[in-house]
Image (cartoon, rainbow, N blue to C red; front, side):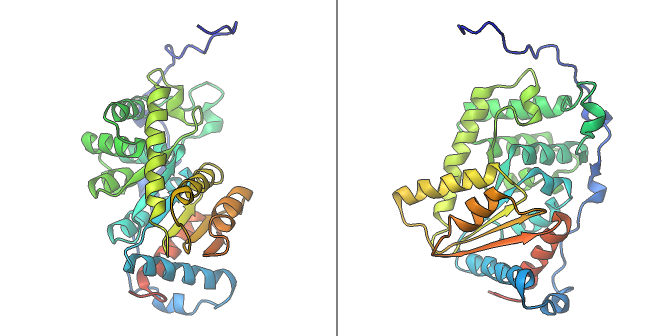
Length: 318
């Protein structure tokens, strides 16, 4: 029994609406198509061999080298990666074996789920916040919270639990959902949640204990994956400015508490280079023993370009 005078807000009367009835600023019609290898070799070869262009090609070579040696390539994802339509490009890299696991923040989980079941995501917050309907899509809250609850009961992580739930739904856009395709391909997806940060947390069926249990299990799973980076693996941070840089740094220190973890590469891709990704991803983890890259630009340009460099093999062909 709490000794505070104020009670938690009652969510039982929250008004929801069908997800399909909500206008979306992003739909699957806007998404990128996977790169067809061989069409941009001359373009990539002709890039200036200086600064970011050189870094892009070097990083692509390190990814190819890591996979040739059987080392992991982890893609950390913020929600904007999905909203800019880059999911199919990253799924393609996963299917081809260049990405071996995904780490998502909570907003990435939401957007990927909505794309799978609705073919669109990214609501207009300015238009819905005033009425209190922002975040109230019924299916998003119901399914994601139920997945967390079932995942906790089955002792699996949140990424696996939501991937399983999407597969069971057989949604119309399953092929462009990273959670769906990774689950089908048995590629690990870890999800790292800040409670109260994501729209499922405002719904009546939210279970904080289940979300916490499944997200903590995913953190431990990420630690096991990060342990494999030793000696040449690669961690790529795509568009998470706060959550994943902090989670990755903690995973690095957990692993180093138990074993060697050196000689790996890290990169941050974002519109603006923020303090945490630069410090917690690019600089601190690889200090003295690896390479760190900071590549600045729009996801919808930089991620397909990077994927093309990896697939076309200008540098680092296996």
